Image (cartoon, rainbow, N blue to C red; front, side):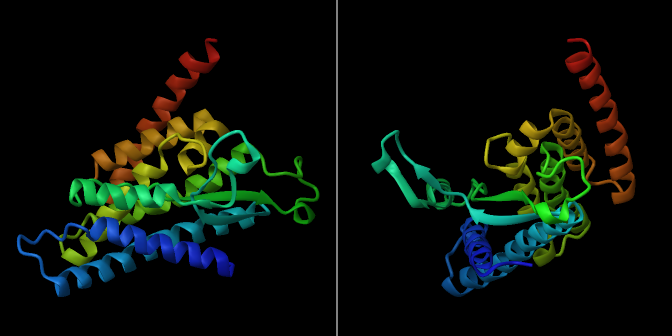
Length: 242
């Protein structure tokens, strides 16, 4: 399911996120042993969250005869000259995540450190209307991973036990950053793939978080209904009326 390079990228991302979320361990007096324990614990939680998210994307992609690949978000071009292009790229956003932690003393989190590409498998798409992956299909595949993180957050929001509560904190931040409509991030690709899908999912996520203290089933049903109403209003006034 995962290639060696992809596994390495996911493990590195997990460690970076573990550092970001564990930088401030909440203790007034620093204890190296406690900080290391907290760092390892949160790294495992971050790893389960990002690996789980990417697995869900791969499952949904397979149903649509596509494949996904996760990689650390890197900048490969720094100008317009050929010499300004780096083949390997520089993981500026991973460095930015670490810098944010130091600058804010662990009070601010920056989680936009990875991206997922979606490609079609032509030989398996025989008979489909489009041989390549459509924008809408790409949006649905990427959204599935965000919904996975959201569900994890809502499930673990129901407990106040410290290790499990960390799942809520990590996953809600992953959802927030992955919904930012910036190109290369999942949210950006969903937005440019289908604005209607983005509006519905954005509304659903905001409402789910706002209603997080309700029973999870009630939360999902209410959020779905209200998000659907928002979608209809957006379509009517933003698309149909044009």
